[in-house]
Image (cartoon, rainbow over all chains, first blue to last red; front, side, top):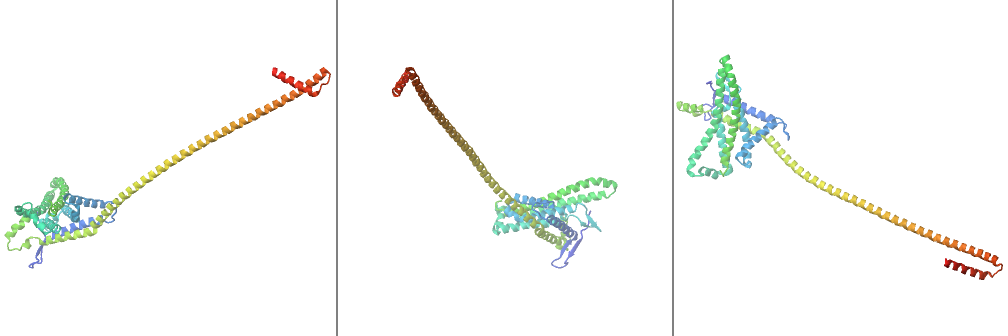
Length: 241
Length: 179
């Protein structure tokens, strides 16, 4: 525990000065690569009568389509289909990447779930919320978008503004909290297992159970993230709400 | 970690904000996600969606054509049924006609045969009558001659043949009436 992060500061002392957590970059890259490879190889040899991996991909597509259809009408919701599928697969893969092992090198943590870092999850959350505002303006017009803050009663406008920030925070931190907690518990069980034969025997079953449960949590959290994305989106682009 | 950032931010006020916040991670995350989404759209989701649309279209077409062929077969079935009915009626009428014709022919033959028989019977009767007449005439002639012969023998004298004959015939007729 208490591992260092491989921080690197780029463009020091310029206007573009920024800090990179190299393990995040690595894991984001790995996640993207895995998602891409799965999707890429599952969609080779597409057939009208699907076989093998194509079935799984189509199931995922229909699943996300179902989520969107629950929240809005498919004519407007169709444009978020690709966003939804990519989010779902990206977050799920990111969640489960930290499960099998974590790799530290020289007390620096390299391999973990990228979603166990609040910066990453908050970035995703902010991206989603900004997209909801963007599509609200794009589909309803600026005037209707502005009016949505004083509906149903004008004096609730401050609450409406707070709601946006609350949405963003809960969306990002829920994902982070679930995955980070899972990683900590796995780390604790792993260090217990490393204490000796007795510790290993004691840690084996809980570790197995928790890893299985974490896969479930990873899937559920990915689903919840996409679900809430579509809920917020529907809330923003539907005038009748 | 996130809260630490803020705590440390106040503690290390001399350190820059972007020093503490992983702005690089944020940008990298956005970049990765965007690139991933675009690549997937091009290489995976796009083709897959196209295939699913194609399948939906195919299924719709199949349903349409199935409906069409169902209607067509229904029509053909009706047609066949009516043809069959017609054929049955035709055959029935043919049989009926044949029977009627046969009956008529039989009747005709029967009538013809009966008429022939009647005719033949009549002819036979007529012939018998003629023959009888002839025979009676012959017998009568013979009888007359014999009578004359007998009478002449009895009387021994010759009476005029003419008178005799008239006399005898009268007698015979009288005898015939008396009988």
